[in-house]
Length: 428
Image 1: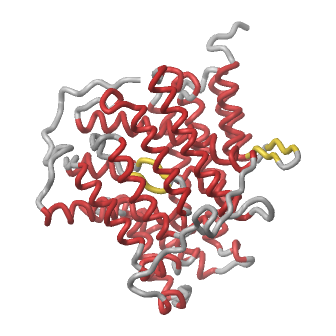
Image 2 (image 1 turned 45 degrees about the horizontal axis):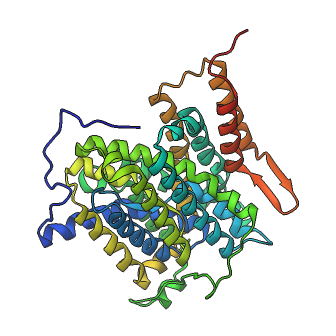
Image 3 (image 1 turned 90 degrees about the horizontal axis):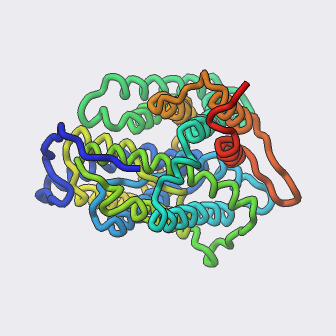
């Protein structure tokens, strides 16, 4: 996989290794912080992990990424949506689950990245395209979004708490509309943070409807150490094959997304990051970031398309700006009031945003197939896409003793097998 530089290159405002003046530096870094903020805190909020820890792991992971890639790739890493379902499942498990299982699952994601990075270093990347073509990755990404749809609807209706509440539904719909309006019509800085705009408006409406619990906010302090879950300190890792297989295979899905982001960054910055510093370095850096997250209780992280969008719009490619955003994210994680406010966000608000975001995840998989010109009139492609979608959304599983393989992991595995087994051309 390669990407040549483009001839219609536009001179950047700040190139990759250029450092802005301190006042511009702060403002530009804050812009990146708020761009990733909504999505990064959304994942832990929905999965009941600690949002402050997620912010800190996001910042630490990004700094590690910049160091490992030798400060040559301006990419920000935030919480990955691909792992919402398995994290929720592991935390809800009655036995053999909980934070210790999430830690092991997240750590295993980083290990998969490290192994693939090592193979890429010695063998190249062509084999990844063979194992994970768009006809496999696209439907799996669709499964990620569609399998979460019932959760979004339940939060939006209030049925996740055992009832049906018209106020909850109204707040969810107002939040959804506010987010859509922000995405469609807001310009400039606010146009870059539609999810955060939806959060704020939904939260304000929730206050009017009396849906916000202020208890944690009243008890919060300015400086507060988040509730880190550290292996063998306040959490014992839960190492089982089921735990590993529930999350590790999804690393290949985010890996495909990672490479797509690299291609986009190549075009924007007029460089070839696959060659310098090398895809093996960026993959190793991405995996290291998830390993760091696992050691403090954060969710797996991945490169963010939202922040790449900021680069494209502003023409500011400076890694110093990205690093500044990472430092600010870490600092925000230790501000108690921020954690308290985030934790107090009602499920109605989360449900309203989820109705859009989970759908965006699903349609991004469809978009990948369209942009890759996958021909679904071919029986081979139709078979792979159809089976992956039904297996993933339908909940087909393999359950033997304590071992269980289901959902997206099952769908990804079957997709890979079908792609390798079914020949490109068949005779009738």
